[in-house]
Length: 451
Picture (cartoon, rainbow, N blue to C red):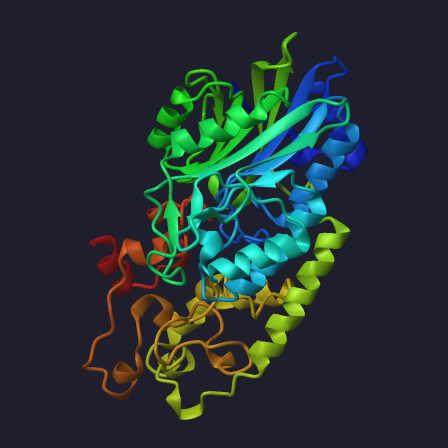
């Protein structure tokens, strides 16, 4: 059963938060309970963007939730991740990976399984950095082909506060598409069921509960789970689709939370007399503003921001290489439209970033500037300040040729142009007709409405 705990968004203070979690059944005093807190498919989203209608997510908020839960629950506590916590992005992806690794180590993860994104900066990078920060990685079927040895331990054992012994096994899908940074043929992925079962059989004489961390698509994980014996819970990642109703596939229960770290899963498992998991109540918690950033993680954010700003400011102004005309070039011929635009939120979109000191954050700038990622468009606030904000060309395309010769027409605006930034995730309430009315400036709106 999955319940969405909406009241958490409105609570103030960690004490009230803890009381609310207790009231909903997460913090029970009964013996023989195991709290499994789990994440998957965060994909480098180290913090909330701060501008979405439903402002959710971030490592700092997650760390606060974990700390409160761990310190307050009467149950044994287990924290796990099912992979793809890195982003493959070239936009400071490796720097975000460092923040992610250090944050997860601070939270005290009991085990993680790698997804393909963890190898986006090379096999050696992830293996070495995870080891350096003390993040326990398990993978029973990922093999270094040349040596025919496992890249990571197949499993590990954790003895929790009550003495409950938990075995943790990792497994990934043989169908994963590894990033180009992984040399072809350097890693081999063994058949998952046999690999997991062998690890489970080796653990079973010494442990009470077995949790498998899997990284594979939904249909595959259900088949794998159904084929296993001696497994209590499977936590899965990879496709980022949450499990809406937790159920058993064979012996194990299968858990999975939504992508990008917006939510965190908390499964309250009841243990039977044999200490095996006999039932699960699953709660999905949105990491909203109720959860302030953990101080230690906030310091990691600050260091990351300073590094990004220093590197962006080292980018030289592009000068004559700029080809986007900028809104000022439109003003002479389109004065009424220019004045109307100045009153819209588009015109002030960059101010949202500067207020948060995130004007150099490339996760944010594409939708708050003009021509980002396009030749001659916005580079950064230091090199191309004249293209900050969502200007005319953000919707109509590069207008430099039109500015020189009005007979050369700019692009009409399609609904898809708006949806490139007003995604279902960022603006779930987006309605084209309603939103278009806020920026309607004549004939252009007619063209857009007909697309």
